[in-house]
Amino acid sequence: MEEFFSRPPTPASDPTTYESAVLDLFRRVVKSVPAYRDFLRRHDIDPGGIVTLADFRRLPMVTKENYHRHYPLAEMCRDGRLEHCDVVAVSSGSTGRPTYWPRSLLDELETTARFEQIFHDGFNADERSTLAVVCFPMGTWVGGLYTAACCRNLGTKGYPITVVAPGNDREEILRVVPELAPSFEQTVLLGYPPFLKDVIDTGISRGMDWSSMDIKLVMAGEVFSEDWRSLVGERTGMRRPSHDSAALYGTADSGVLGNETPLSVCIRRFLAGNPEAAQALFGESRLPTLVQYDPRSRFFETHDGTLLFSADGGVPLIRYHIADEGGVVEYRQMLEFCAKHGFDPLAELGGGRGAPELPFVYVFGRSHFTVSFFGANVYPENVTVGLEQPEVSGWTTGKFVLEVTEDADRDRHLKVTIELAPDEDAGPQRERLAAESIRAQLRRLNSEFAHYVPEEYQLPQVTLLPAGDSEYFPRGVKHRYTRGTSS
Image 1 (tube, one colour):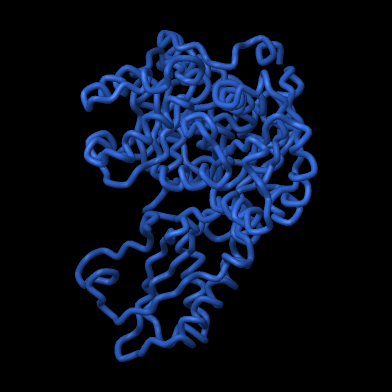
Image 2 (spheres, rainbow, N blue to C red):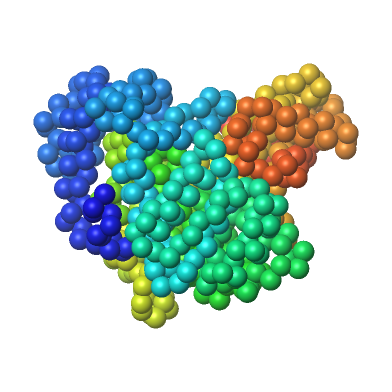
């Protein structure tokens, strides 16, 4: 607790501390967590033999299947005591089965440090009175309550921040913000990107002048484009694209793992305008979320193009395979890459706050398994149940492609392209039936979808295609049920 109040907002950048920090974490977890000791025993691992980072990297990966669903919750906590944790967050699984993630105030402070980096380095919130409006859903999910707690912790540390938490109630947000914002020098909206845009657009349609409130945004849960950032920035009157908004890389499993900084945003905006450079750096044509992270708090590794991390918490995790597609780029490596492509992000920023010498992690998300929509993970398994209902199953094959599309106004929509059974015809009535069946099962099975996604966006856009369509359902290849965001 004392360390949080005394440490600077920008983490130290000495790489020599990273290795010792993760090895110390491993030793603490072995000593205090019964489940992890048994996990190592089951894998014939002698903890005493893990003395170097190379040894650490040979440890078996932890997953939900082989760890979290294998042991009682208390045994995965420090000293095997669930009651030592103050709060439990809940995340939805692919079939709606909840996963529980307990934490304590000390765990919360690690995430608060990431909020502090954003509020201090990007928003200068140590010098400006700030209204923080929590627009994440309030409830057992990690977003709302966790965010409100972290913002309050910053107030306790001395930042002139006042929190209001209307959650994802658009009407309540539009009621309280115009009344409270004039009393503060700036207003920060914290929520999922498509929901914040919906709030902003609705406010504009009602004559709200966002530019008078000096709006800032903190977002999580979705990969968004730099065109989206620019568009929302224009509509709210934000003047500094690299400083006025920031994305969090967060998860119910371990809070916030990393955050955008002015430096990472500046680099991402350069890459958005230079797709060949982005392809060379990330190996893909799509643009991932790009954040920086503190390796002493969240230690990242990669495995076959996916991410692993190690972090302390209510359930401490060692080499946890989160299954997000992505990778790690060291700080100097990133600057050298930019220089090779004729770009100097430090000069672009012009000095000052927001350029920590910390490594980068980029995240595409779990595009092979799920899509993210208004912060809710939408799983193919949920859609499958919708197509298995009797009013739909007789004229479809059960194959589909799930994706999130973005229209010309940068609004997002859930799209499901469905394969018709042979000799079956498409039509508006059938599209409507399929859409309503899918929505009903998503609402029933996926609590995140039911509570995160506004009702007017819950009905998916359905397209029916003939069996064997060459683009979506080609013959002779393994079918992929999801696609990344398209526009």
